[in-house]
Length: 279
Image (cartoon, rainbow, N blue to C red; front, top):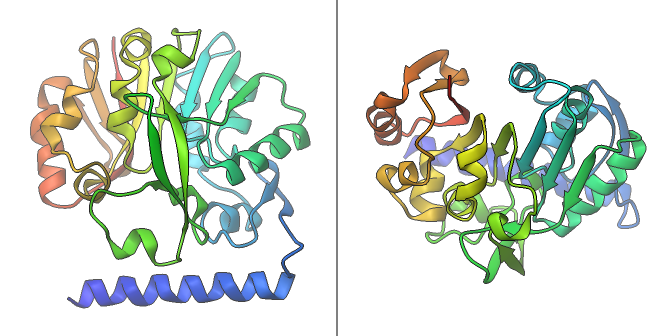
């Protein structure tokens, strides 16, 4: 109960801070241009997560360093959940080409601006929602944490609607059908609980990739996707031989994936990006 109260208080204060910043800047300010270790970025002034970290100097620098170990200048990369490009833009300097998927239309506008600000020519952006079928999907556009925007959760939770997100309807697509290119050396999935559905719609793409990085958060499985660990694992291709949990400094054989992920799920322990690899 105390933990729930803490999160309600913490998120409530963030919402208040975000609103005050918006009021101070005025409605006509659509973005703030900031120089960071990731590059030059136009960020949403109300975003107190990725946006604020970029304004403070940098975001995801350790993750960028890890991902660079899995690509080279000949690599093709697919990022599903590109946000404003804070990972994609610095990674583009270390690979051949990046296909960038971003569902949020407001965030996508910033992504396109940031590609121009950084003179990036090897990233191809697509403003689509990756799914297991072609259908209309309700989508929450979060304000305080725009990177936390997501499909409307199956189970409502304060985490997802504390900042009164706008609800819009998006067309969704299977990436195996939508994308003509199915061969990527690295695939990165970070789409706030929709990872399972996206993976089910990109089975051919995943069967060809050398490295898969996917976010795993138990509350997303429970509330957003409403699936269990076995269902999540069923979407993984069968050619991977090992996986790493960078947040927890662990590496395991793929034979342990059910045991490890179930234990994490039961303990409500997440991982920002599980790295699945094959020898």
